[in-house]
Length: 188
Image (cartoon, rainbow, N blue to C red; front, side, top):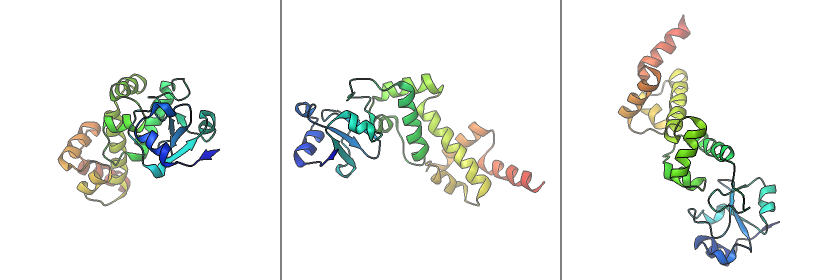
C-alpha cells in the first residue's frame, strides 16, 4: 500500500514536477491531506510524507484530497474544508496563525479561505481564532492563578495590552475584572 519516499519522488514533490502526477500521490501526516506531486502548496517536511500509488489508497487511510491540486479530480466540499481548518485552529490556537499559514496548511488560497470561511461560519478566520483564544483565556482566568501576561502567552497572544483590550471588547470586562467576578461568584 504505502511506498517509500525515494530521493527521486522527494525531488518531484519539492519541485512540483507534473511529469510524476500519474505515478504517485503524496500525503502529509500532520495535515491529513494528500496531493499530486505537482501541487504548488508549501513543501512538507520529508519525515511527514507518505506516498501512495493511488488516490483511493490515501483516502482509505483517511487522508483528504487537497483543495488546491484536487488529486481526485473533485473539489473538497467547502463545509468539509472549513471543518478541517477549524479543527486545525482548535488544536493550534496558541501558536502564531496567519491567513497565509492556514491557507498553506489546508492547501488553498488565502482569499478563497477568507471568503469561504466567512460565508459558512459568519465570521472570519481571525475572528474565530480570537474567539477560541478568549474562550481559553476565560477558562485559565477562572481556574488558575496565572498572571494576566502568562494567560495571554498561553493563548497565543504575546502582546499583553492587546490581549487585555481584545478580552474587554469580547467579554465586556478586563481579565482582572473577569477573574474577580468569577471568584466572587464561587464564594457566594
